[in-house]
Length: 221
View 1 (tube, rainbow, N blue to C red):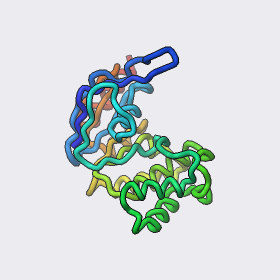
View 2 (cartoon, rainbow, N blue to C red):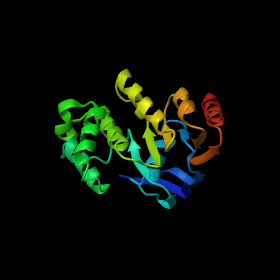
View 3 (tube, rainbow, N blue to C red):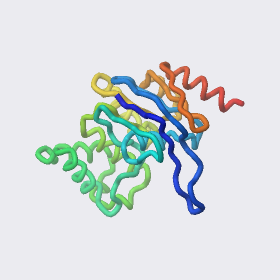
């Protein structure tokens, strides 16, 4: 279960505090429920994923995670640019206490990411797509209760997108997803519930189809 309670978020700018991206967002994601986030560009979808994934903190409010949650796959952040992909992967293995089988996990990550020799080059030389692939591979190398995906199914070529979809399907029996995607079919395939972000608020729908309907109606105006 994940509880988001009265969460507000804004970022500082050169001119001081920026606009409120999220204002009083509250919802509870039950166990084993996969959720799709929808909303206009700038509505706060990626911001909310970062808050739920624990790589950012609310300006006000709280996020409680009563489960093991991945970092946002596809976000591309959270990697140390001066370290190689392999060194970043080793660091993550140590954080998760997986030093004894680190070699197997590193081999899985390198194979899954499909970035070749770049795995041993500094992450700061990677394209955004390469960073997303590496983060996706790193997430898939560990067992989480909830996986967070930010447009990862649109990363890379058709073969990699197919691999990502297949990996998500393999999670269905043991984990859930919180997903952002511009593809309605992807959201309908992997998510049951939906959250529509609109004007800083979050609207929960038990059916992803209803969330998509309200979102579509809002941009048709």
